[in-house]
Amino acid sequence: MTKDGSARGRRPGRPETRQAILAAARRRFLADGYRSVTMRSIAADADVDLALLSYYFGSKKGLFGAALALPANPAELLAALLDSKVERDAFPERALRQVMSAWEAPESGAALDTMLRGAFHDESIAALVREGVERELVDRLAEFAGGPDAHRRAVAFSSVLAGLITTRYLLCLEPVASMGREELLRVFTPQLRLALGLPPHRRAEGDRRARSR
Image (cartoon, rainbow, N blue to C red; front, side):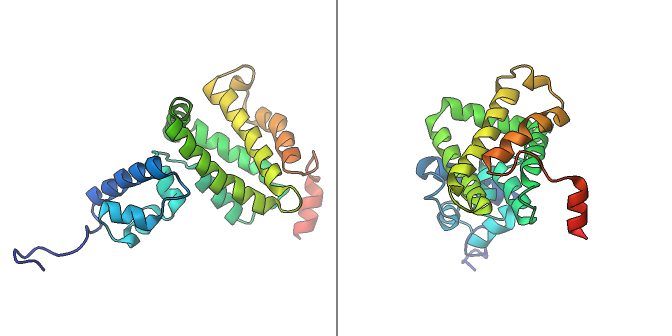
């Protein structure tokens, strides 16, 4: 305790503490890039205990998404999907469904749109997004894909998704912009499968059911 009776030490977990962490994270990420920033350095800048960062945001990628105001952080979505032990054969379709859900939900879609448009106009944001994608998306995908040229296939997979996002949600090019989700899945899932090095068609439903028994 200090002489005036107040508690000594760093800020406890209060609503304003969360905002202080986010402000410090934005400054750090924009100044140093995703790869160089540590949770400890952000905690020091915000003058809070390191444990509070995990309490509020879970992980560095969670904090990155929150700092850029992403209610649905693509890295978090991918991590959750990979951590669910999804089969490689089912992954392209599942990933595409998650991407569409995130971009078409009103709150998360608006934030993602703002982030991506900002990256087109601000090199510092573009560099930050690029680092985050390389570190949290491509690297995880490459590990998941495995085998020869895993990194190249992970980049190809990410490029197909990025092309779809740009065409449908930013440029609103037809007919992709007005396609229903199931039609998009029919058109783009085979491309994602080929990019990841999978056969163009999934196994028959009966085969999957038989194997799961």
